[in-house]
Image (cartoon, rainbow, N blue to C red; front, side):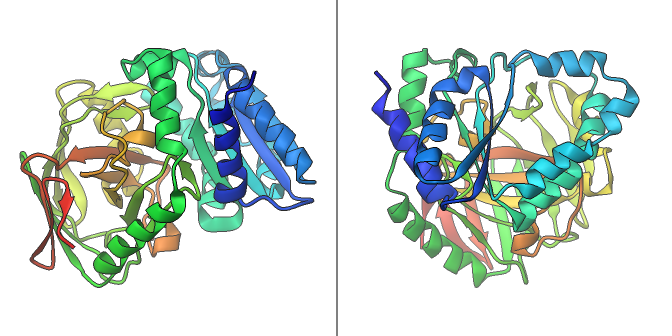
Amino acid sequence: MRDTRIEELADILIKHSTRIKPKETVLISSTELGQPLVETLYEKILAMGAFPLLKLTFSTLQPLYFKNANNEQLDTLLDIEELIYKKADALINVRAPGNMKELSGVEPDRMTRRMKAMQPIQEWVISGNVRWTLCNFPTQALAQEAEMSLDEYEDFVFGATNIDWSAQAEFLKKIKEVFDQGQKVHLVGENTDLKFNLAGRSGIVCDGSHNMPDGEVFYAPVDDSAEGYINYDFPAIYQGREVNNVRLEFKKGQVVKASADKNEALLQKVIETDEGAKRIGEFGIGTNYGITKFTKDILFDEKIGGTIHLALGRAYPKGGGINQSAVHWDMVKDLRSNGKIYLDGKLVQENGDFKI
């Protein structure tokens, strides 16, 4: 018997997140481990009179690719792959990994080369040319990474996704209204004192239209405005690798000093990917207070109520961002203890609680 929570999540992804209409083409991507949700989506999309197209892979193929691909293969985006994305009306990406550490042995420059090759697809998607959503399907690998049993992780996932997104949207709009009217943001926390400007930039409300779960308002800071330093309490995860105790210092919007206690070489390598990787492309405010545990999965971690996240690299044009990069690396800062957010000198959040 099919889990009713999977049915509910599929309905949210189709009706709320991507708003599928009859005769549209819907690209569903996943691994074999996402089969229960993929089958449910496939069935429901057909019932709506739309056309599901599957882009499935085995959960074991990615490490094989990076082990065996030559430089030409790493640097090449096939026309047919780009065409599939550009012809789709909507994308549903069901993440169902089999091993969260499968890329730990891959040289960082090989991954960044591939990211650069895939950048045209990334730009096409984030520029609003197609409706898209991303979600997790609970697997043993995700549960282990979150330090939960599979049953516990299933409860965690569905408890964060299967909620009243209309009510969440109203809460997010209120936060956006406040920050849209301000300019100067000042973050204060443990080993953190960072300022940047939002002048002329508009906030993006994340109410389940793209990521699932969701629950954040994010901005693209003015590119040369970041001044100060930040220390990340949680590990920064990049392609399955943990970079612990990341410390970044900014001057005139650029990272001028970066260090970490673990995998510092990876941190330095990613920052040098291109010029845009040295700048903050995103400032996000987590608002999903139903997510309280850090699970080493940015899809959930950046939404934790009482946290903020800053992404090095690519900005989203929809919010007025202009920073371009092959990199978009979100790092989460916990402000629930001794943390404050000031907007134009006024305290708007303290210890994770909003004062608006």
